[in-house]
Amino acid sequence: MAAILAVLAMKAQSPMVLGENHAMLRLAQDKTFLLLPIQEKEEPAHIAMLDERNEMVKRLNVKLAVDKVDYFVPLEINKAQLLDITFNGDRRKTGAVKDFVCWREMRYSNSFDTANREKFRPLYHHTPVYGWMNDPNGMFYKDGVWHLYYQYNPYGSQWENMTWGHSTSRDLIHWDAQPLAIESDWLGAIFSGSAIVDKDNTAGFGRNAVIAMYTSAGSAQTQSIAYSADGGKTFTKYAGNPVITYNAPDFRDPKVFWNEQVKKWIVVLAVGQEVQFYSSSNLKEWKYESSFGSKYGNHDGVWECPDMLCFGNKWVLLLNINPGGPFGGSATQYFVGTFDGHKFVCEDDPSETKWMDYGKDHYATVTFHNAPEGRIVAMPWMSNWQYANQVPTMQFRSANGLPRDLGLKTVNGETYLTSSPSKELLALRGKKTKQPTEACEIVVDVKGSADITLSNTKGEQVTMRYDAQKQTFSMDRNKSGDVSFSEAFPCVTTAPTYGTIRQLRLFIDRCSIEAFDSEGKMVMTNLVFPSEPYNMVKVKGGKATIFQIEN
Image 1 (cartoon, helix red, strand yellow):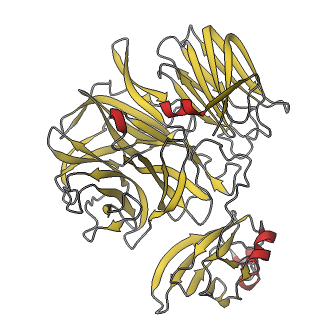
Image 2 (tube, helix red, strand yellow; image 1 turned 90 degrees about the vertical axis):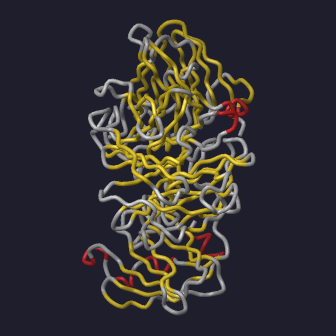
Image 3 (cartoon, helix red, strand yellow; image 1 turned 180 degrees about the vertical axis):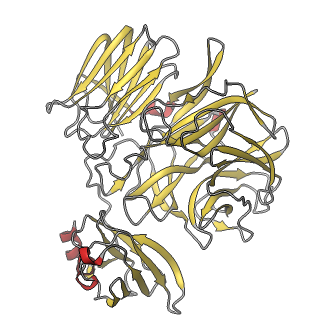
């Protein structure tokens, strides 16, 4: 890629070196982008973008290349005229700033090549075009369009520089990348949150305005709002931010919803190892209502990204946790109960932990506001904090899991959350085929216990087993392909099936396997990185039908 960019783009001028860890770079004003060379093993350099009056227009942290270029990211010049750059790291090991390879490789360009260069980029899962992605944020449906925002680093493929990226879709499957939605300010980076359509203009920003509520993560974590008058394309931050403050280090991820009982907006926030509920009539002024979480569920990590789901007279509180997942790292737990607009009362035993997905790679799961037909549609981040920064991709990191419709099911007198592949996925089914491909759906009809093995000619394999007697389903990815990047990656994940499984739907993409019981009682999401696609399937105790995925 570096050679291609050198031909097509103009080289940047030499830097002004001001010390052993300090340099400045004057920017050309007739180009759109400065292409920054990235080296992932380096410490982030702190960059201030200054305008013609030497006022800061943006600040970011970028792992500028010292001796090797892994890839490039585009920095939009816009009104900036000068970069003020401070490097970190031990100069005795990295050498003199003037000799860093980044200066020789920086280029100006009016475009950025986003053609896929990753063999593990999914074919039918949502991914950022480039850069890092984690939690889904602010998801809503309006005028036939699904809006997906997400935690995004446009300046590298590891976590940093949190902004809201934005993608849109008309079918929940094919996604179009949109410009950045909300960027950091002096209150802090833009952490996770939610968005609603204010159809009755309760906030005074206009009827049907889209209002986002998010965590401003600076020296403290506070809650802010921004509004959009163009359907979620661009946002204006509210002049009265922050709208909620609290004296706690972990105070974040607001999920806003309307509660018809009290005729008010409710927000649920993750606060350390509990959640707090606040109410408001205008989305600007908030009143504390109650807290939930003490002695309930799993407390092995920080609680994050809550969501509240209404199923008639029952409510489900989704609560993501990191670490503390059933197989290490991050995962999504949930609680079933009632909510009266003031307080959530859980019907589960306090010592019980219910997991939404028993795979290793299902986290930060939240739902779309205003989904059509009364549906409750969720999407997870498909990774795990134990190794998310190390998975074997570089142009981008992380995908979202497939959209899933949620429901409730009673088993032996207890209520459980169900997850089923959203109906839009049926449109992906192509012709039946005899062998698996890198992107396919495998429907397995089982009678009693069953063993399913996916493999390739390299001897790499994933083994799944349904034990009808024990009522468990397991997936073994110890020999699935590349597992070397993290000791936490090779594992066997096991889920309860809450009854008999008669049919499994397995969604295979280039780097993932998602297994759904046809009734939604069991779901398991796991990443895999085979050196070549799995092209063989062996089923003992069942019959497999393989559909090509046509995206």
